[in-house]
Amino acid sequence: MQSKKKNNKNNKNSKSKDGRAKVSLARQASLKALKLVFDGKSLSAAQAKTIENLDDTRDRGLANELVNGVLRWRWQLEFFVSALLSKPLKAKDSDVQIILLMSLYELLECRTPDYAIINEAVELVRKTGKRWADGLVNAVLRRFTREKEELVSSVSEDQAKYSHPDWLIKKIQNDWPENWQQILNANNQRPDFWLRVNKRYSSAEKYQQMLQENEIESVGSAISDQALKLLQGIDVRQLPDFSLGAVSVQDVGAQLSAGLLNLDKHQRLLDLCAAPGGKTCHILELGDTIKALVAVESDEIRMQRVEENIQRLKLDADVVPELIIADAREYKQWWDGLTFDRILIDAPCSASGVIRRHPDIKTHRRPTDIEPLVKLQSEILQAAWQMLAVGGEMLYVTCSVFKDENQYQIQQFLKKQSDAKELPIDAEWGHECDHGRQLLPGEYEADGFYFCRIQKTA
Image 1 (cartoon, rainbow, N blue to C red):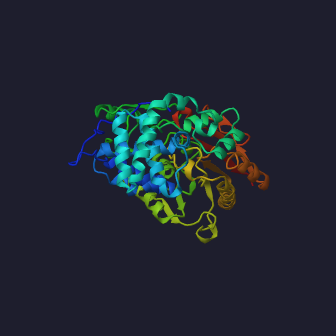
Image 2: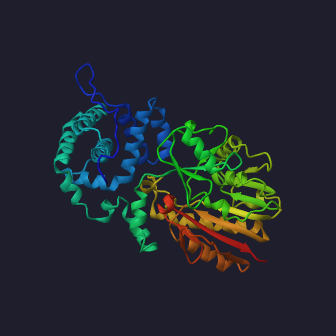
Image 3: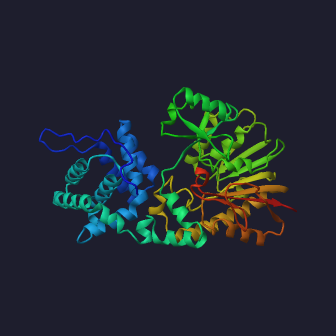
């Protein structure tokens, strides 16, 4: 970690009437959010219950910084806590542990004065009802400020150094022996803020001018014509004409999918596992490029997001997409028998390529998760293949860096299907694999994605 990056001006050491330091709403919300995540909730669900309810944008900013920071650097922060405590805290005192993690992260990464961070940590412990721990927290944090350089330099084991669980480090090392450090370091970076400009609304160049007129800085991408990266965080509602469908928030790596489908206006396209609809909408934004589109998603609530995005972007004029809530594998229950010329599979996966955007993945993912996901992906591939027309093309996409889910998955599929032929992906980005192409996290400032094109020959 690099120290003192973020300037939290709203973090004054204000006092209550009895002279004690007040505990900021941001830190209270951070503690609640992290407890939810450590209890198994997703980060997005935890944020919705806690941080998003804060009225002040600065409070929301600080809370998100603390929560994301702790989840990124959890294993390094836990190393510091272990070094500073004479014995580990009990499981029932997890809230005290989390307060220490939050405070250590803030001492390392934020510009808040050390004394203010320590005072608020002590008051936050008292607010939990565990007054016995206020002296412990005070002593641990003060010791850390004295011994910080020594403790940071003592980090040597990979789990603490790269702040990933050991199994995840080993798996990435095994799959990417020449790139594993690059991947782990990229996973710990803050994600870039990418937009996809709606081609029906504007070009990227024209929209960039609109951003400049609103004093919002952005840069283009070398791998996607419609992508713009914002140089500062912003509420999307403040983006010019966002409500009118001018842009969507989508990582630049995800924007590569539509261009790899080789579309034309006579084709019927099937989009499997479609939610939240970024790729679906991108395809529709390309204009008069397909004849029909069917999007399938098993989760009704997530399908609502697909529909909302289509409506906001005004994409149901030329081609009215058919949205089906169903299991992609159970195709006989919803498929009308008409084959598709193109099929996009945005496969459920470990999400190991988007850890920088969803740092809770490092906490929630388990090595035992991979085999069931590989089985699920295989079943979706087999189902999709039955619906693909002869001569048609299928694009298999994951946001994973694990070869089990990617090139090994495709290798097994090609062995089973004598009528399947891999098509090349001619691109400067990413890494050519035995099958398909892998974009690693951080490359071209994108998240990690895998792509493979397959044609049905008979």
